[in-house]
Image 1: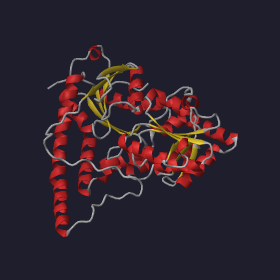
Image 2: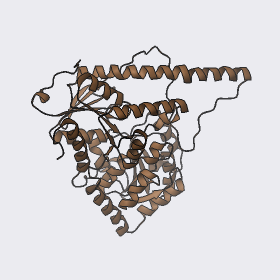
Image 3: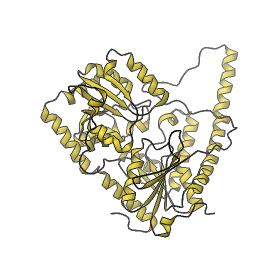
Image 4: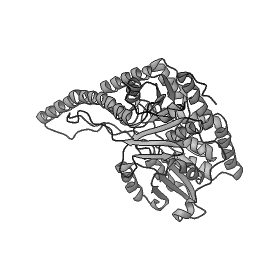
Length: 442
């Protein structure tokens, strides 16, 4: 049954893509860039995001539409456990306080019930949720040539929309299944989730991957070779720097160290905050959302001797990220290897720094290190080690002018070369063209 609403663009022969997000679309720069670029190439684009307080249910940005919907809650009466908290480097699963043998057995039984019956109910509810979510989306947006899942959570939704409405399902693997809280699930459930991811990925008409290491893992586990689409920097001249020093009342002599993105466990912000104390005249700006975890980090940073040189600031809109990045003296990316996903990640802010010509201090991990070494855009550090981070920051900030200029030139050369966003869009359009039977490349 074709549930989707009629689309005037389709009647006019315009290709249509719907990007499916499991977030409110506030700081998602990859989706913003892709939607904007597809629109510029003649596609009709809608982003479907999660409804959130303070955000409009419908809006138009840069020529594409944004529709925010409530996620359905089928079988909400079923008691199911929440996902575990994400790990930080060196963290271990929480241990229960000491108890009597009888109480210990009782707790063990309750935990066993939660992790068997509870997790099973959670899985059943999610399968129902994906179908109900697809139905709600089909009622709200026109049928599409491409239903693109921006991550694992919306992949079964894209597959359900393909069944309901036709078109093609594309999986944009921006993360691996062993990420964040999923990596803390009990082994049995982690393996079951990985098995479902493999089945869903094989069912998709095409798979995109955010970097080469992710693509290699996906190919090894699914037998399907994804198309690599780096979250590269926008083309054109570097953005005009935002006047951060004037806005924040900083001195001209202050060197800005920028950590921009979600404030979440495993991002190395704790160690970075401590490292700033050993870098003279450096001011750390932590820019991004993070809820209660962010509030806790801000409180811990406020207790440090150099607290006056650490600022926690709200998230900025994706179009403003280049200007904020360009205003920094160095972009810090000390992500910790708490999950396979973190070990192999190439975060958006790495490419934002390339596009702005700003040197990076990044973790010496397989995903990022290869790009930093290949391009010569910065210095590597040992994540979670404040001493190593401070040494890397001083290496960049205290170097002679020609060394700093060398970092800038290397970053800009990489941004205009293999990592340029226009090249990534061309790769996406070649995939779309293969699926739709059209010549969509350039």
